[in-house]
Length: 311
Ligand SMILES: [Zn+2]
Image (cartoon, rainbow, N blue to C red):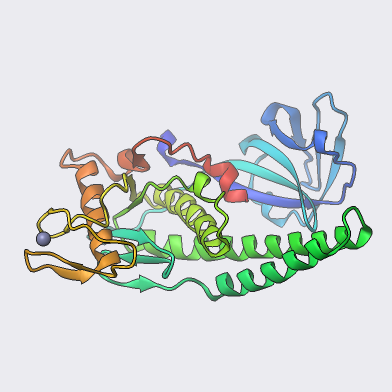
């Protein structure tokens, strides 16, 4: 068994405890946790004095041995407290090569456009989420500050956030698994998603967070199924002609790529082809196995998969 086969799998279990003050939340490395034999409770043995926490609904935990747990994180969510386990698993599924490769251009109008010209729409809950978040946000700001009505409105708002993030996660998992299973290599832009999520445009921030999750799951399934995932530098991917390489300047509103070489393509499809080509050239003709190039990328791929998958 090589380390290639080890992936970190997330597992989240609700706890009933309400004693988790802010200072007591956060990450705990494996040496400070003890999972009970029956998987019904966990004991935190660091000096803060949390002690034993009862776990609710531990069905998923039964698949794992206590020594597979790498760390836990105690978190508060709008609907209660959770322990997030980061579990190291030897999970490798062998599936046959598809001989297809794909480049993905993430967009606002569509979730992504791929290098074959296929477009995947944004899931409908993105629109719905935007509406209900705006409404709920307005309600919060209308209430008197430091009032219990405002607090109640805030709880409502954070429950909406929680629901959206669960839907987003669900969507990301399904789509990423499908893309990975149907392709030997998947290339996408190395967007600085962590920074992008801070932007103020609601529609954009929702999809940014969606791409971030999607990417994390692409890389996770890439490891599980032994497929190459390559994050490429996004520079010039939309300006360059995918056919002849000439730079064709276009503004954001120009939706079609028209080049003097005769190449006419949808703007996003052109970008997706460039992304694929960059991805293929990163992998190169070095004959490395797909796993060696898994997560090949420029700088800043410090996404901690274990943690991010839990969110
Ligand atoms: Zn051209």
